[in-house]
Image (tube, rainbow, N blue to C red; front, side, top):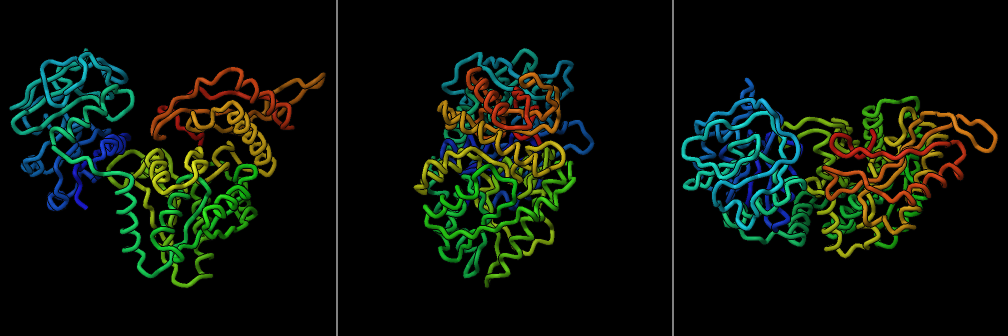
Amino acid sequence: MNSDILILDFGSQYTQLIARKIRECNVYCEIIPFRESIESIKAKNPKGIILSGGPASIHSEDAFKISDDIFNLNIPILGICYGMQLIADKFGGKVISANEHEYGEAKLCFNDDCDLFHNIENNNTVWMSHADRLENLPNGFRAIAHSDNSPFCAIANDDDKIYAIQFHPEVSHSVDGAKMLENFALDICNVNANWTSHSFIDKEIKNIKEKVGDKKVICALSGGVDSSVVAVLLNKAIGKQLICVFVDNGLLRKGEVKQVEKTFANLDIDLITVDAKELFLEKLKDISDPEQKRKIIGHTFIDIFDKESSKHNDISFLAQGTLYPDVIESVSLKGPSKTIKSHHNVGGLPENMKLDLIEPLRELFKDEVRKIGLELNMPKAIINRQPFPGPGLAIRIMGAITNNGLFLLQEADAIVLEEIKKYNLYDKIWQSFAVLLNVNSVGVMGDNRTYENCVCVRIVESTDGMTANFSRIDYEVLNSISKRIINEVSGINRVVYDISSKPPATIEWE
């Protein structure tokens, strides 16, 4: 399938957000490494190219560069942040290290009319994140906007349809950033808006059929929206060639096993449940390092799936619900982005795994997956289910995992969810859960001194999981959660609330 818009990735943590905003315009786009050969780029027949941001400086000895041939394709190009500096450097502009770095919100003031800013009000709020800035215009370009610290915040070469901007239009903090990307894709590149959830489903079903052939696929189910959508998609594509396996690793929420089994019975999809609680807890015994936890869990899952697949004939593939936030935080396969943490289904997989992977949702965000679930007529109770990490409660328990710690967290976490649902907040927030800190503090219950554990409540609002704000939850709700946990869960005498956003924190604690 040809890509209408190609995004060359220079390592920005937000590269996939560019793709997400373009897709919201019903335009198909693809992220490729900045190193991609010009022959490969031509073969994709793009109608436009976007150069992403990135952590490097154009002045670095190992600065990322692209082939000059890209600028000879006679198609529109948009450079964002590092992409702007790359364009400026290519065409003779001067990029310097700014005395005052710009991080956060800034006001974008237009110098002149430009198709990129069509139907966008002047003095607009945008999101900056840069240490270098453009000092002198490159040849053939004009300044179309500025900010307080960037005299050339946006530039354009109208003849060649090359545009460059210093800010990040892809993040939600840039008020009309999505409209700018839409202007680039639809008006400047003249792309037809015909890529939808329906077309994605048709394409993936075709890809799955071609890849699997007459073999069988074992699908790793968690009961969450991601793996559930994968299972339904695979069921549509290959039917009885699909074998769904749900592993009870002992790290699940209270009552989750029965809930998952009921869900897939209602979907009329056969499910094999493997009780592996003792195996996981034995392997995780005395393990405190979160990266080690993730890798142990990932390897153990694969061992179980390899063992389960040996009971069936012709199983050659493992399907799982990996999403892009998992990938971007684990390891960059598209470009040079920085590793944040590995995920058990990405960085935690062993190199000698016997099964080939099928990950149809790997390039999507959670909200896109939910739209696909709706298109597949899946129950809303599944589609709207809050995210739950693959490693489960292992990364919500600080330090070593014990049976008592798991019990405390399961009980506290169940109360958080019950209260959030009671106050009709469950579908209005992104994620709500408890974290066991494994830190004891002094308390008083009745006339007795206690020295017991502390639980942190984490409630965040987000649209894609890449950025998130802590929820300004009503004190009445927090008070109810705190009272219930302390009164009902013996062994916890303190509840705190996490008010950090992502970035700089991540949503999960480990």
